[in-house]
Image (cartoon, rainbow, N blue to C red; front, top):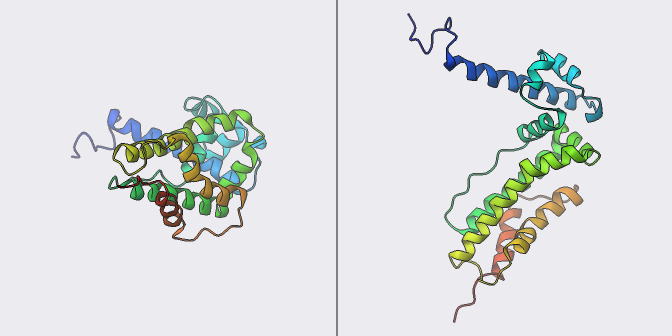
Length: 206
């Protein structure tokens, strides 16, 4: 006989979480399927999503209060995962952060999901606000923490404005991935940007 935790006939708590995750994954993949088929966000009703995912509308509403919250999770699932910082130096952490942005830029050019959603998010202030609060703000907070740590360890000048510097650091990647979608994104772009900036930001010795 199988152990209690693995017996397929048992309905204990150990099996509830995997079933929930499987349902959520099916719903998110259902939305992705519709977006890949070119269905505009405005036409993605909860009824249509439920039908595509093979679940009931109540199942979706138990997990998300509305389409905006669901779409934010779809965007997160479609994007590359947040990077794991090495923590060895300011330069190394910044390179990893910018490389993540570069990869997101490449993904945005090839992913029908990202392209479709990003193109339509501007017309939905609620969706944009939700995405901003749950995706963009945490990334910015991470960048600020890296720069603040670099200032504390003496890798940056003490008078550096961290808020401004964060914008300067990510600016080149945002320009090339958002404002210039046809611009080149070479493999060493992150290193180029970081090394160019840090050359003028290090403390002057002597």
